[in-house]
Structure formats: structure tokens, C-alpha cells
Length: 303
Image (cartoon, rainbow, N blue to C red; front, top):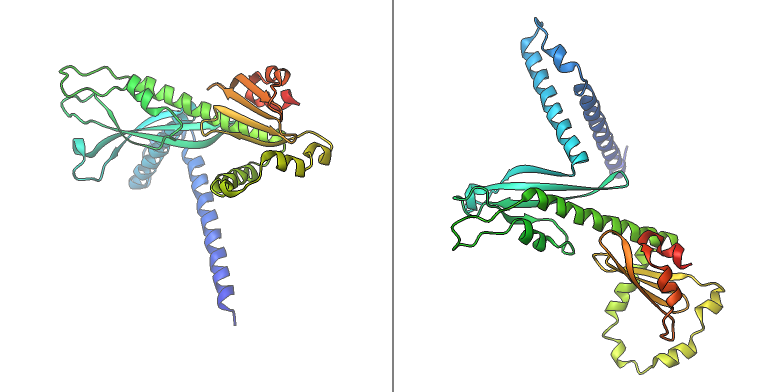
């Protein structure tokens, strides 16, 4: 007699198998309904079952609309849609215009962001205001909104000019640039053989230990005398930490000998300013000059 654990395992395996088959069926249906001449063949009459033909024509039309939407999402990157706010007290009867921004890096979609707009004044149907959004805090959303979709003042009689298309383009550029800088940061850590997870954990441990260092009566000179030089221990100079702020506009690199470099990154991924200091505080001008360039080439340029 089978145990309860064995029955649960069999049921779980069957559910996984059903999910795989359903996904495979949906994929085959999409391929079949996307055939270029299928809609033309369905228009041919007479047919044995007119009702089945109409149902098939509706499915083909639905799949064609979905394919067109996917093309716009893949090529344009910014698409609009309409949703309904379920709040009974929502402005403009709950009518909401959504803007979806798809970000793709290296041929793959990495994230999708949404910005929802409503009409605070029904008298001015073209005036929009940001209602909700999923944009990260490090993206300058409000400055872009103030520039391209300014909100009309209550005392003004004429509505201000808004440009939703330029707002979407500029916002998408900000998001794509941010994700490209994040991807470049991960590439730097990979080249330097620095684990991003261990770096984050170390930073968290340092932040949590800030309150305990106040009672430690140990100077930096004593620490440096007690600890051996990591270069003498390993025999080679390497990167121990590569960090950045949330916007990846400032990258900090730490070497195993105590050398620290701070690099200012533009939105397009160019390092425009660099400061590299040795352990004693002196500035290394040679490495500072070599760091200027693309952020992806930072590790190779500093070696």
C-alpha cells in the first residue's frame, strides 16, 4: 500500500505534467492560428458547419491582434492600454490610461514597467496626471513629468501643453540606460571575479556594525600593524570589492592592497571622472587617467 508521501509526490508530478502539456498546447495553437493564409481559407464558402467556421475566424482574429501587440512591444518598447479603476470614488469614472515600457538587454526582456494616468479635470480631456507607477526611485520620473506632462493649475483657464510621446521616449531611455549600467556592473564583477552576493552581504554587515564600533578603543594604526598586508599573503594584486549606488552613477572599486577608486558614470555608461587613491591617501594619477572610458572596460583598463 502506497504511503501518503508517495501519493503526494505522484499528484505533484501529474500536475507538473499537465502544466507542461497545457503550455505545449497553447504554443501549438498560437503557431497554427498564426498561419498567413488561414484567415483566407476560413472565408471560403460553403462549409459543412458555419458555426465552427465563425468560431475559428474569431480565434484567428484574436491571435492576429495578439501578434500585432507583441510586435509593437518588441519593436517600439512603449505601448499604451486602457484599464478601469475599481474604486467607486475614482476620478473620471475610473478611466485610466496605462503606459507599458518593456526593457530588453542583449535580446532578452528583463523587466516591464507601468505608468498609469488619469484625468483630474474632466473638462480638459487631454490633460493627464500620473496616478500610479512602478518606476524605481532612482529614475528621475518627476522631473520628466514636470517637463513633458505639466499639470495645469486650478487658476489657469487654458490647459498647458503636454507631450505624452516624448515623455514615454525619455522615460524608456532612462530605464534602458539604467539597466545597461546594471548589466555593465555585473560584467565588471565577473571580470574582477568578485561575487555580487558576497559584496552585498559584506556591505550589509558593515552597515549593521556601525553602532558597535563606537565602543571599540582600537585605532586604525593598531589594526594595520596587527594585520598582514593582503598583497604579501596572496602574492598578487586583485579587486576585492566593486560597488555602486542604486542609479549606478558612482562606482567604487577596492583593491586587495587597500587602494580605492571612485568613478563617476554618465547616463550613457561613460566614465567622465575618476579618482584613485592609495592606502596612504596619495592620489594615483596614472590609474585615474586610465579609468576614463567605457564602464565595461574599467577592470581591463585598470589591470
